[in-house]
Amino acid sequence: MTFNLNKEIEQLNKLKKLRTKKRHKPSKLDKYQYQLRKFYENGHTKADLQLWLAKRGVKVHWTTVKRWIDKNA
Image 1 (cartoon, rainbow, N blue to C red):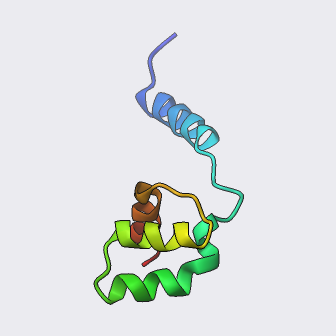
Image 2 (cartoon, rainbow, N blue to C red):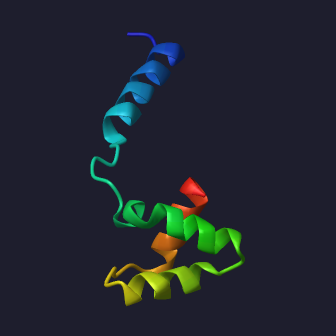
């Protein structure tokens, strides 16, 4: 049996695609996307956004807000 690099790479890529799962449910923050974008555009910090969400009963860590802003704003 010979080693075929291209075949091995192809098999690894197929495995990676199977392992990578997409998020199927929407984020809690999607409901507030307009407000979050406006606050952030007006200079508020991500920690400020987390506090604003907490006042509305949305419990998330500020790093969750950071990831959401980085992806969506």
